Length: 186
Image (cartoon, rainbow, N blue to C red; front, top):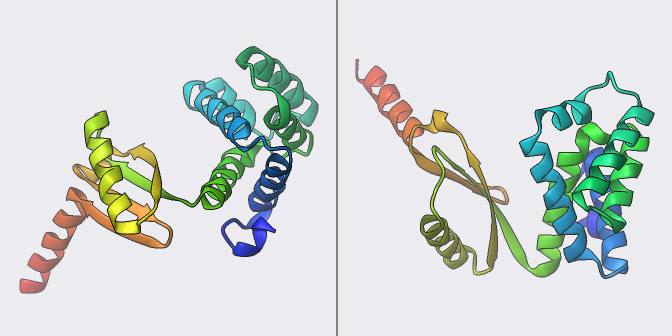
């Protein structure tokens, strides 16, 4: 079973594992992954949808009704839509992003891919992203799927996390190291 590998854990991990097993059994891994990516994009674009998903103020029935309309309008169907409806009915919609992240990790492992979480100070063009992907592919020896987050607080450079390994090459980190060294020199 996928969950035995320790790749996902907790409540979100159990849901992600169940979805992965169902999608694998029905040969729908790619379709489910695409639908969940579309749902995540909707969450990123709509503060109102994010509020609906996160807020405990809305009842399960209200969340399910609103979610059904959103899924229909977005064209999200099949296993992914049914999964999200079950999550809403069970009052677990607040953890949907963690469930999706866990599902994606399980799919990546199944396909022999590695997922890298890359944090940059500003958006990168496709050529730069390809350079980073190629460098990670050389280091890991596997195909690399990247999730890129933009965090202006790192000032410049980047942070890369692959599995339990993390490389912090951010300008903020380097400045903090210099600041610490200067304090030690006094």
